Image 1 (cartoon, rainbow, N blue to C red):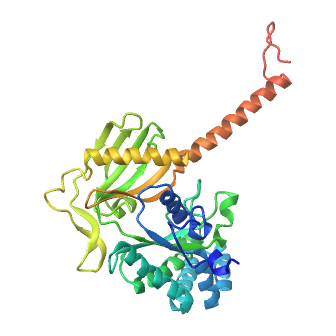
Image 2 (tube, helix red, strand yellow):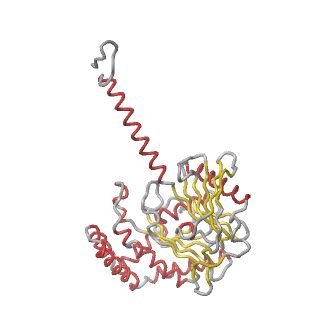
Image 3 (tube, helix red, strand yellow):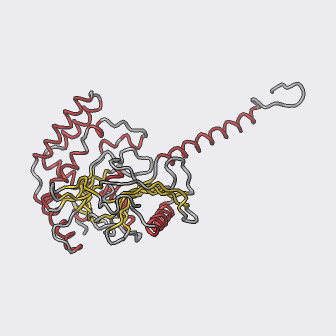
Length: 368
């Protein structure tokens, strides 16, 4: 007989056979589970599932208050929303962690250390909402990511911060664009814990040109160090436009980079640190790495069947890793809207012809 714990676990590894498409992992980590299952180079990790989040709220007696906060925020002004957000974040911080959940998280971080052979393994702790990274979703980017966390205590503390992020002002004031997103306020959140890549360079790439929508191109944006510089907009990235058929680099803009995001031993956290002077004016990617990334992007797009937005990193030893994959939304949504408009226009034209409206017949120009 299958136990409830096995069906609704507190922790689910992204290489588990049940992880692909599993809503317990939220959008971001379910996507990484899919990439892992299909042989793409994804750093190992696990999700503290949506079940764990709900268990925490229930055990702390916060589930009902969470619903009240979301309901009150819908009609409140911004100062009140900020007050509600701060109050509930403080409640999450103060609430005791259920012993069974704490044990599951600590044991999983220790297992990740064992799997990677690294004591004190640096990990990224990332929110992965149920409504995040779905085609057309608007919640992506509103939740939290914390980098270079190195202890079980740190993972537990930052899991709480990710849970609190479900009640940040930006999320509480979000107004859905679609009926599917309308219930997003009731969605739970997974917290992904994943090995950090000791990145030489990192960034994002799109399987179409994000400026023009040209699907014959792959556009790669990268910088020295961690990709946080590109994702946050804190660093102007170098940009490479690659033909999707020939893999020729048809345009590039290489930026001089004096600082990069990396682990700062003085602060014990990720921040801006100097780029080595001998490479600060050089491209962050070699020609072979650009080629590898472009081919990888095309392969992921082929697998997914639609344009994709991909976060990547190149390790200090040159391996390319996939950190996140989500559907490209801007041009895909625009093209879908255009297709609907064209279909409506075509139907209208057929009906007009059938009714004889606006159709000119020969002779005196009379319309029948």
